[in-house]
Length: 279
Length: 204
Image (cartoon, chains in turn purple, blue):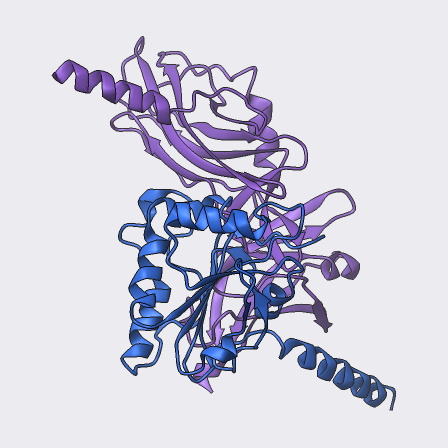
């Protein structure tokens, strides 16, 4: 009887387990930048989502449609993890729907720190249950249970020959905090404004083509963005979804500014002044 | 002088923009009227239901987010609960021909029956005119019209923007909250939210 239940359980588990095999909608893999770990020494682990050409998945704020990947991480006892480092997204415009996400591939990485008391010679397993959506014109939901086993060694960790470069290139797409860029945000009953003063040397034309991705959903409507300039301060006005909802105390998001080569992604986290309430 | 001229042009442009914009459904404003054929060939207009609450539910049975609400029985539960109270529930599909979720009326009737839909009617909007008039962006995308014709809710069905069926339980259902409040003569606490789901499959 109980064996029957166990077998049923295993069957059920195998039904809901997408073994990380690639299908026509891509694959998610759990990878690390090291081949072995050492007590107390942090390393990077991440879920690498790969998609076929023309398909995309979503950022932490998916925009008008879609859903950010949902991840449930399981770590061995005593291991701690930093925040997920979401690379800067791009816009997928399908009027009237504007969404934010990634195409081709994306690495959702975080720093993992093993405790001091792990035993050299033992294997440690990290697990991630992930649900993600792959969309082109239609959306395909995918789920996967991912597992990565890493041996603990007394020697310094060996970098992964296969994945180190993937982590390196992903790290260059993470929005950075740059105190040379000044931000301020204000809100009134109908709109929210983000104003930016770039450091000297940033060309006006680049700012005019900058894109702001609000991290908080439910705040503003998405769509084409038009910056206005006044004395080298660039402002973007975004229509609020509802003027009645309470406002957060800070505006968070990512500002992506075109450069001569590629783009610069800046982390925006600035106090949100409510002009409407204080007036 | 030059600035004044530009401002004048700007005002005209703004006026045009607003004129176009006011056609879109806005909470607190009269809900735009329309006429669409339902899957039985009857012409349906929300204005004909004055005196009753009307719910508009943008749908596409092939969308994973819609599947969450029909697969779990959540949408049918809401439809049943409120149509029994006299609410008119209109499911609308704005998928363009050739796009996901566009089916002939007979197929819609078959699928709706199979799902146990308790909607008053299913309306087809293949040219997307009504969807765009209401600013329907996702499936599901929900709208509630007061018996006096004013739009009192526009947005998500609930506060769980996920396709995982486990998220139905314990979700705060905004449509239920809006209808219950308005039926009790109270103001709707959350009249506008950001919808979630698949994009509406409008023509390119």
